[in-house]
Amino acid sequence: LAPDEADRRLEGLRDRLAVAAVNAPRSTVLSGDREALELLLAELATDGVPWRWLPVDYAFHSPQMKALGDELTDLLRGLECSSLAATLVSTTTGRRVSSGDLSAAHWGENVRGAVRFAPAVEVILGEGCDVFLELAPHPVLSAAGAATAEARGAEVMVLASLRRGKDERATM
Image (cartoon, rainbow, N blue to C red; front, side, top):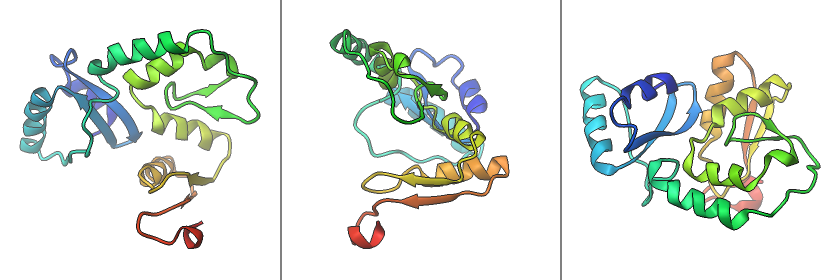
């Protein structure tokens, strides 16, 4: 689903469910209470909307993470980010950030709020970047980055640093 459609479908369930991630123009992750999610997914299936479960044991980026996000904010209070040596686009805000933006509250929101991957990719594309490298033990967002670029009509190269079950040196 597109993020606005996913958000519309959460009407009446926002205390139990949330948009957890906006990965691409038509790739949205929902998170929260399992029972509420199962009800919504049954409705989506009836409407012919494809979906799949993500193999996680927690409801990251949902109302259930508020207490943990608050705790993280409290634990990080007083820490300050030094100046940034490179441009940083936050998937918490979906915008370019400066060191002053990376407060304890920013990281608390990172745990409980939606991941804004697609908006962050849009910002990066707008700055003229056309090569993306996913640094991870296995690429999970490369396809979303490519889909975001394609929706914008941008040609990009998307690379993975590692791939599960593949020789690490060969992949790099």
